[in-house]
Length: 184
Image (cartoon, rainbow, N blue to C red):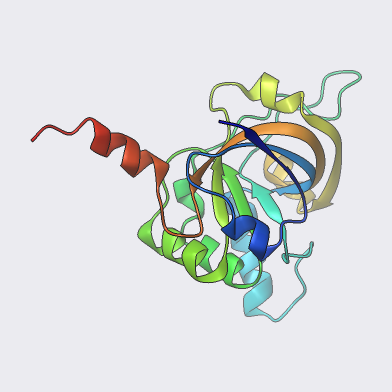
């Protein structure tokens, strides 16, 4: 299977063209945000305040990177469990978020939002934070500095290796994989 090379921002048509199981190399700008940052994003939306970055075509990486060692833009940057963001993701997807990077399965509501609005969920390499960090070429604090590693950062990445888990047709690579091994 060929690797799909993608550059952010992602368009709806690009997202809809991906399939569960596709291997991807993602380059361009992505944003970091975990559950505490997502809560603050929701607070901004509730108060009709602008978000700290443009959602249209954006990709959010669920990560809380470790401090950067000398000469590097970021420390270890492995994905965190995505389920903690499931309460927030459908609204962000409806507002134009096109991609999410994490590990673990997503709720039916997130899968449905991906189908409805043309978004995808990618799995990063869990347990390989140092490898994932090698793809990060720059890191800039964007918002919520008080959250420390969970602050929102703007990362420029090059050839970040990912797998499409949930595509815009509702397919779920994890569910499909389990079905292959069910007995009876």
